[in-house]
Length: 325
Ligand code: AHM
Ligand code: MG
Image 1 (tube, helix red, strand yellow):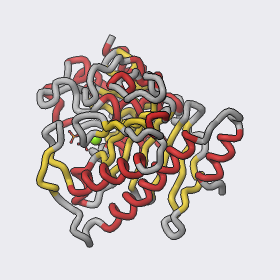
Image 2 (cartoon, helix red, strand yellow; image 1 turned 120 degrees about the horizontal axis):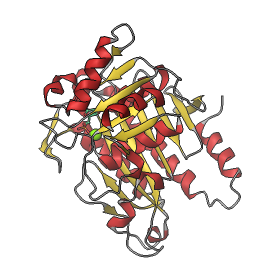
Image 3 (cartoon, helix red, strand yellow; image 1 turned 45 degrees about the horizontal axis):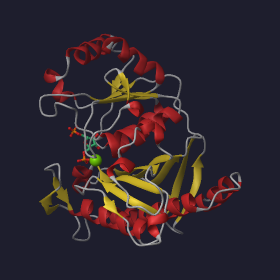
Image 4 (cartoon, helix red, strand yellow; image 1 turned 120 degrees about the vertical axis):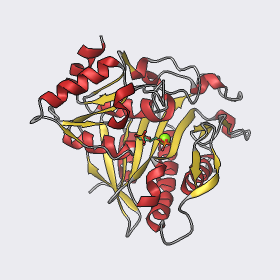
């Protein structure tokens, strides 16, 4: 089986003008993924579970592993002269990576270092989500907010790392989706799931239905109609987005996080949760929308903005769209 390193070399060779900058960026994410995976697997036997005693910009309690993963991804990306800026769910402002040599780098990364972290204490799978863009500002200048607030269609690459029964890195550069599984004994990712495509049909719907009463009417009606066809649909919801999306990628299904009374704009963040997942889902043959607009076409206004989010098999999302339009 091909390793991730070999895969990167072979894809780089297809682009003779490539400088290797992008490959170095994936190498850095791969390294951080291995360390986080190791740490997540130790949770329970070392003092890394529970609250860090602080809240992030969105007022959510930070878990110790949230803080650990954030610091680690930032270090991995800043110590190697590969990016010019980073934005993270755990930091209010973007981070300028500013040494004279780094100001000449092309890429900015937006990242949710540890998504689903409220699940950590009970040994449920969590993930990292990342999105990569080319800067808009000229090389050798400070990066600015415009470099980050680009629509998802501009993503150069996006992916997630799932810390599950095994650790997987799944990413796309816009040329299909490939999945790599970590062999923890030797610390190597192998190409285990080449060219992932969503199955043509799906029967799973995944959402937090406890919020049903305050969903928009169209979503309520959509769900009620799904229940009428009770032999066809089944619910699966882990509450850890990467895990829910990963399962639906292989089994077929639709993931829904609508607006509700607690979260009037939905809960999930556009820039480092919805956009990267939408990029992958589309690359795997599916659709990703926010009410009746394609997620990837939203013009972002702020780093941490939220959006209703629906994605999955094309046919399933198209049925939902009939209710939304
Ligand atoms: P987080 O970024 O604070 O971890 O929250 C995101 C998580 C997603 O993984 C998941 O889909 C969602 O929150 C679950 O929310 P809820 O508990 O409202 O169902
Ligand atoms: Mg998150």
